[in-house]
Structures are given as C-alpha cells and as structure tokens.
Amino acid sequence: MSSPDRATDDQAASSARAAAEAARAAYAAIRAREDAAGEPPLAGPEPLVDVHAHFYHDRTGRADWAAVNAARLRAGERIGIRWHVASILGSWGHTSPTYFASPDDVTLANDVMYALQRAIPGRLRGYVHVNPNFTAHALAEIARGVAAGAVGVKLSASRRADDPLLDPIAELAAEHGLPILHHVWQWRRRDWPMQEASDGVELARLASRHPRTRFLLAHIGGGGDYAHTFAAVRDLPNVHLDLSGSGIDRGMLDAALDAVGPSRLLWACDVTIETGLAKLWALEAIGLPPADLAAIRWHNALHLYPPASFPDLPPSPPAPPPHPPPLHPSRPTPAALPPRPPRQPPPPSAPPEDAPPLAPLPLTPPPLAPPRLDVHLWIGAYPFRALPHPDPSVLVRVLAREGIASGWVGHLPSAFWRDPTPGNALLYEALALHAPTLRPAPAIRPDWPGWERALAEAVDRDAPAVRAYPMQWGLGAGDPSLARLASACAAAGRALVLTTRFEDARQRHPLDVAGDLTPAHVRALARLPDAPALVVCGAGRDFVEETAWSLTPDERARLWFDVSWLWGPPEDHLATLLGTLGAERFVYGTGWPLRLTQGARASLALLPDVHRGAVLADGNQIVATVRSSRERGRGGAR
Image 1 (cartoon, helix red, strand yellow):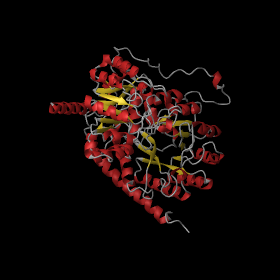
Image 2 (cartoon, rainbow, N blue to C red):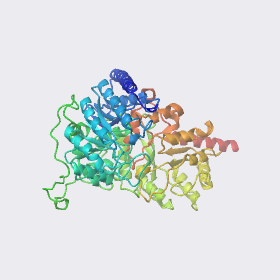
Image 3 (cartoon, rainbow, N blue to C red):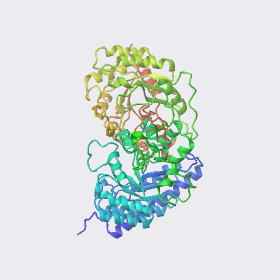
Image 4 (tube, rainbow, N blue to C red):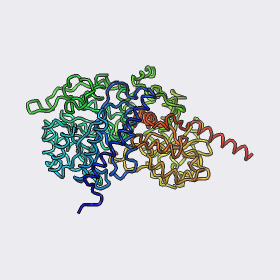
C-alpha cells in the first residue's frame, strides 16, 4: 500500500507540469520588466554562471514554492546570470528528510528539475540529485538524467564522501563526463541533526580514489572552517570550489585564491543570491585581474561541465594549468616542490595615511540612497581568525569607495576583554585622524566598576552611540546592570548598540563559547520606561520578528535593526521585514572588518520592485531626535 504522501506517476507529472508552467510565466514577466527598465545588469555584461542553485515544487510543503522560484529568476535577471545550474533536493524535508531523500522523492524532484530545464531552456541546466544509500536507484537516476540533459550530479549530505558506497557513482559520473557537486561542511567537528555531512578531508579521499572524476566542493561560505577545507584539497586538481553560501567573511576569497588559484574557483549563490553578488563585487575590489575574474564567472564552468552545456557562451580560453602543481605518482612529493609564488604581494598592515583612494570598480553598484551611514563597524584584531588590515586608514578608503559618508566604529578586541576601558582609549586615538567620517562607539561594560566614567568620556568625545556585549561578558537577559546602562544612555542621549553575533555559529572557534544575543535581552531593555534608542546589529529574520512582535508599538519605536545579516532573494527575508515592519525600523550596517562591506549593499540592490528605493532610518537622525527629546524633557522639568 502506498503512503498518502507518496506521489503517484500522475501526481509527479502534475508537479513537474505545474512547476514548469509557473516558471515559464514568471520568467516571461520578469524579462518583460527588465527589458522595459533598461537597466544594466548588476554584475556587468560579461557572462555569468551560477553553478549552485536550487528550486522547489508543489510537494515540498511550501505554499510559496512558486514565489521562491520566481524570486531566484528575478534576482538572476537583475544580476545578469546567464545560466543557473540547479537541483531540487527531494521534497525538501516534507515527505522524507532533505539530505536523506527517499527514492520516490528523488525521482519526483529530478523530474521537476528536467521540466524546469525544458521550460526555460536558455537559462536553466539541471543536476541529477541522488541518494547514495540506494545505489541501484542512484545509478539508474544518473543514466536517466543523462538522457534528460542533466549536466552534473548532486550529492547532498546523505553519506560520508569517503564511504566506498560512493565509488560506483563517482565512476559512472566520470564515464558520462559529469562533475559531482558535493555538499560539504567546512571542517565538520561534530554531527548535526538530519544530515551526514562530509568535510574537505573526506571529499579529498574520494577525489584521490577517482582522479578521472571532477568534483565541485559546495559552498565554501556555507558554514565551518573554510581554511581547513583549502588545506585539505589544495593539491587535488580534480576538486574545484564553489563560492556560494551565506558567509561573506573578509579574507575568505583571498585565502581561496591563494590556496587553489582562480582556475579552480566557480561563482555560485546557493540559497542567498545577495551574498553571491557581494562576493562578485568583492573579487573586483581585491584587484583580481580581468582574465581571472572571467575564469571564475564562466570560463571554468565551460571546462568543468560537458561540452555544449551552455550553448550561447563563447568559447573560453584553454584551461590554465592547475594551481598549485597537482600531486601525481610521477611527480615530486609536496616537500620537494618549488615554493609557490604568491598571488600578489600581501598588503601592509596599514597603508600610509597619504595612500590614494581606492579605484572605482568597473561593476559599479547602484548608489546608496541616503542616509549613507554605517552603524556596524569595528577596527582592530579578532581573536579567532586573521582579518585583512582592520585599520581605520583602510576603513575610510573602503567607505569612500562604497559611497558611505560616515560610520559608527567600535574596537573589536574590547568585546573579548574583561575591561574594555583600555580599548576605548585606543579607539579614540585611532579615530582622531579620521573624524568626522569615523565616529567612536566605545564599549561600556555596566557590571565593571567605574563604567559611569567611561560613559561620561564617551559623551565628552561626542560619541553618537556606545556598544555593549552581554553574551561575551556573561550578562543574562534582564541583568540589572544592563538596565542601568540603558537608562544612562537614554539620559545622555546616546544610542545603545547590541551585537547579535560576530560569526556564523557553524564556524566558531572551540574557545568561542559565548552564544548569540537573545531576543529576551533586547525585549528587557526595550520595555524599560526610560529605554534609549536601541540598535541591534547582525540579527536574522527570526530574531527580528520575535523581538519586534513581542513589544508594544511604543516600545518598538525605540528599536532598530541593521540589515547586515538579513537574507535577500530567493527567500527575501529583508523584503518581507520591510513590508511588515517598515523601512523606518532598519538602518544600514555591514559588519566590517569581519564581513564584506558589499553584503548589505547587494541585499538592497536585489530588493523586489515594490521595495526598490526603500529609505532606511538614519542613525544620526535617531540620535539627534533622542537628544532633542531629552532636552525638551529637561526644559519641561524646569
């Protein structure tokens, strides 16, 4: 007897037909709007291939499946993506687990993907997704996929990559010339629920056993320690890396280029298209030569996938030699290899004060609408990984290049010091030469003796805001010292900035044991009768919604969120929140030097038409309003 949730052949055909018809109609409407607007693509006119995309269908349990698919197509046309190479992971957890999809769900999803490929033949190419725990089914699906025009194999987190069960799949992929896109956790330090993820070391073992098979290691920005991955696959020329994932750490792209070179990197988005666009802009910002950028955008895809996979793309130059020299039995061991020349000279720790401004980029992002203020910046080192030149002299040049007029700047190391007071002194001194572009946001620890003097100094130095780090200092939600600090900030007319997180929880150093800030922390402060202006940075959609809708309208009016960690298309978390809470509840923030400054800008550039041109709140105006209200209150008291 079949399960009531199991798709019959007729139902599978119906799902494929529904997805194809919805996508075809959506794409036609999107192209009409883009043609009417006449705007140049955000990624420029050069070809661009996204090698890691996903779609949904009507049996995934999502009522918005068609809208999510359309959002990917909309963002792709806005960016200028020529080809989406995509897969559908079974029922996405609806009738079997996403990463352990049942054979029936795998077959249905592949059928839908092939239907989408036929519906929009000039934009979509499909992977055949398989679950290696069902070997015979997986091999049959690959053969069926080849006949249907699939251009690669998608392996998700269903079995460790080095398990012998994957060997026949790798061999069959090689026979058909199909690359394998393998879901990888960047240094898996523990198992996570509902998946059996592999890391770079495990994929390297599989790739070593199958030198004829080309592997694409998925989402270096998808969580975990990418530096561990780079070391694991550096010397395997048949392992390429896709740049997708929601992580946009500064230094990640530089490290990937240094490890494997541009010939083994491919541009991709996965489930956060805005971070893909941010990385593309960042590749230009770090000075990548045009030929190397073209390799990442599309040349490498032409070499990796079967011939004629992308028929409208011009022929690419011959594939460059692998970087670094690959291991081979007839070649010297790594210890005997000549030293590898650096990709480019490493930048100094801080450029001279008279350094010229950064050159404008060929792919000029759309100008930021006022207010052009970044409320989420730091200078200084981070204890858990190296940051490229986190110096104020670099920051002012970055802001100028990005069209940002000024920023609130904290001292990053102070968040991890027991007493942040010495860090504040360093912050004031470092920013003095860059006023008024860089304005201090010192750290005030309210359970430390003498914190009132630190706040008074912040007022004397005209700091618009102060920062507090409750999780790093062991202060729970409702801690009385936090309430005292909040009240003091309100009395002083200063905003209180709270940081939700510094890094993705999946990639944190074992010594970084502080959790994320909780909505309960923010609620407790916003509900104070004398609450200050509260600015929460680095929050995701769930945090924003839990906090905002747990407050009265008057309490919520004291609270703002920055946009640095809110997903864009196809999930469109930022657009959803702008629609439900209003743009006036959000401020511009980037998280530099931990995150790429291009991230927030890309999120705004990819907003759907209804929210294009949304004007965020102005942090400086927030503070000015608070101070004005405080002065009026004092006048009334007299």
